[in-house]
Length: 309
Ligand code: KMH
Ligand code: ZN
Image 1: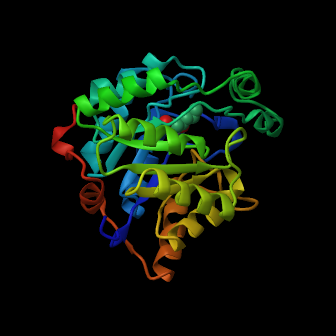
Image 2: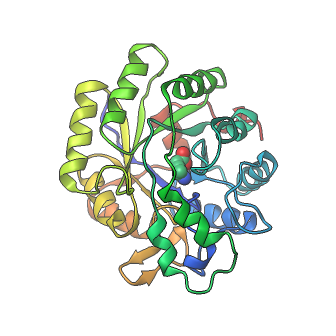
């Protein structure tokens, strides 16, 4: 596969981990998610990764109509590549998680490449006066849950994505998941180019270290062969890891889904602030930033005119 000429910056906007009381800048209503995504794109993010949240209480929701409203408004305001989540929240069923992507048929959709403990209970201790009653029990409950992605589920997700021309963005939380992707590639269910998002530092997954990132990339080269890759990391590991990824020839994911801070002790006022910071770092490394259409080229996406929203 030809060396990538420009790097893809992804902005993951809201996710299903952080809750509104953890930061006054956290985008947790549909309007705030739309605004943060469009600003992040204007700041240099070719791709925006989108989860839906309920306007009533800012909680993660599988509601297709809310997701449609968010991605439609983003499309009306810019030509960013929208990556719709199929991970949703840890408590959602496999069907609930996949339904928005099936209905809206985006160019890119996340595909979580295996099961993992996905624990962020310790965040609860940071909330003194919760805005909503659900926040603290929601965070603490992750101690009880497993983020389930069975082989049957993965096969169903891949067949569904292939059927609707969606490119899977494989979320890889640990090295065993590289082998899972290789297994489904062998079965002919993974169509090229293979796009890996190494999501590091989740409690339950691979720790966010440089050695581990090198190990993930090495294992993927051995098991998968050609692939495009990107790196994201939780919390304070975010910028050290995504900077390392750029130096290693990878791409970068930032955004308030993964980290609420711009630097230790300084809350980020938007995902765009993190995009601007990683863009500066990339340019100092002599790298050029791909715009949305160049990202479409690199990932061989079906095109924004082919989506169903
Ligand atoms: N919220 C996590 C449980 C995805 O977007 O596909 C999963 C997640 C991954 O955010
Ligand atoms: Zn996500």
